[in-house]
Length: 279
Image (cartoon, rainbow, N blue to C red; front, side, top):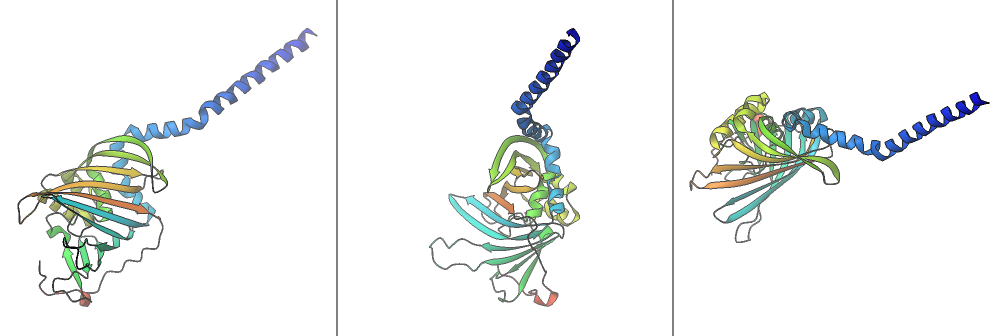
């Protein structure tokens, strides 16, 4: 009889302990995953951002929207773009929409841009270029490395700029276009980014490091739970070659619909304009 009562008491203790464990897990286990996830995100933001470009390569392709806002002397203009990018193939296609003239007359035709390692191709460039011809620009010859010239920052170059992150902080969780993301903020160094970039972007970023007013580039970037960039904003500063005043540029790239078809074909030699291009 005594033995039976002891067995019942011991069983009750075991059941009570198990129930307590379940209650504790119900109260804390569901949130601990998110908490530990955020703890990992905040652990080494610089290391996380250095790997962001590689995550895009593994993702393959995506759609992209771009926005570039320039401000100088009280004047502010915004250039927008949209298209697709093949990160594995290092090639993209954007349609870039220029703002109206200050007088509000004469709409510009959208410029079609093809982005490739070391090169920018533009169609509907105007300035004496036939409508059926492409203009090819070697991005390493541009003082901004084509981070600004094309009116849109090459999405992969924007990602590789993060390889130059020297300090960064984890801001917290938020959402971009309905997708849960982690927000990081920091400053990238163009010299370091050029050194660690892929071969196709190295020369262009090196040119930007020399051509911008400062090699330090502040940024805000938003990564999804797979570590892919969903949104990145860079703030550039360069000296206007004609007026010698400083131009502030905010360039934003939004990436979405990963895996979308992105068949980017570069023009053949005969379709590239070989004449002189007016400024």
